[in-house]
Image (cartoon, rainbow, N blue to C red):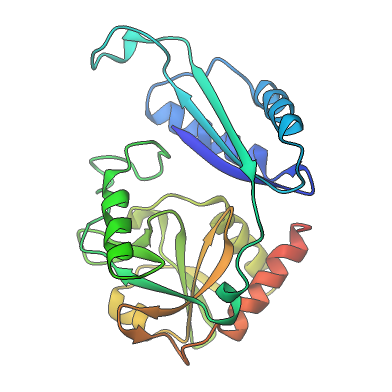
Amino acid sequence: MYEVTQTFNRKIFKLEDHFERLLYSAMKMDMPLDFSMEDLEKDLIAVLDKLNTSNAYIRIVVTRGEGEIGLDPALATKNNVIIIVKELPPNPSWWYTDGVHMIISHTMRNPKNAIDPRIKSGNYLNNVMAMNEAKKAGAFDAIMLNGKGEITEATTSNIWVIKDGEIITPPIKAGLLGGITRKSLLKIAAENSYNVSERNFDEDFLKSADECFLTSTTKLLVPITKVDNQSIGKGKPGLMTLELLELYKKTNGI
């Protein structure tokens, strides 16, 4: 299993939230962690000090450990922790002037009664295949549906639409990973008196939206201006999307 976060001005972003989600993944996989958040933070700081950059990408990978080859989880008992860091350049300016092009993938999101999408694990093949579809179509990323034809999420980010002033994102029960940025933005929007909700919608509703955007820890908020061959709204980043981006950055001290 893994988590991805970053640093802003050398400070690790929302480590407590990411560790909490790591604990959830570990519990669902029956894979106890033999280290604490304080242990992890100490190791992260040591690696980041070696990189010595203000804004860094951080990937934390945890395995069950070494052991004989087999499917029995008991074959490995002591965690291996791999920390990968690299310099993270600013997001491209064109994301916010032009927006990004997405496609609706033909690869279905894993059903939650097969593999719980809330587990952030390396079991990621359907997301990889969906991203491959997107790249073949010349798109930025792919949006995945569940078995009912409802929007779930993109391959590595959550999806939002704005329609008639309402900010909408699919609920967790649709079959998606509960993003840290998603959780934070829901709270920030509600506290600032935006009309925000979690409810299901399909691709027709998404394509009829006034605005659309994605969220993730390293991307923050990115406007989506085209899905398949359909422009979203006026085909330009929406004013409310950009407003929410600035509010998110201000609230989190970014």
